Length: 265
Image (cartoon, rainbow, N blue to C red; front, side, top):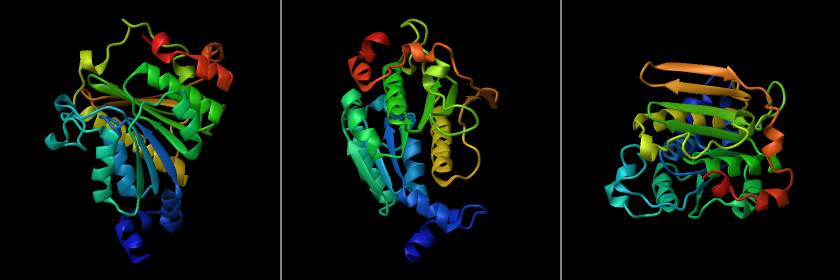
């Protein structure tokens, strides 16, 4: 108990936080999908904050061009699996936290099997196929989803399928169907300033902590956009999209049958 208090003292002494909020963090279970540019700061801050149980999903390996923004890894990690390596690094940060690696791709079967074991799902992926799949699974399983995305000099953060003012909205209320292949460039093509995933990932971690502890007001039914070149934050209110339900799978069977790679190609 003494180590617990000393480690988290700066949080525990906060107004409206205290030992009860810290205990909520310790008992929480969070699944982070993606251990890349967004996932690295999310994981580091959640582990440091004392979120007791964290799962990391990523089947990718560390490469040299990751190191510009994926600050959890070093040159010695090139070629290693990201989720497994992340667990090794994070254990050195906080041994009071249980961190589990899932070195595999998050497909429909994985989502249906694993999402139910966690309180909050965090989307730290970098492609539309994964975003829509994760979102649809969270809607079906009624799991809060903390979303983040980056490109070039900007990024976005939102909390979907969480209780807030008004109805629970999903990613499909923002974008009912995926963009066509030539409408949005990936970071591999368009590029991204290395600090942008750090900023957006840290904001995502903040929303996770707020969801768990109940402090503040989460970004439910809102989209926060950050522009680095002008140091501007913009928040817009989201409303239900009339076409969202037309493209969303209404059952587990429909969810399993969807080819996300194909519809997002």
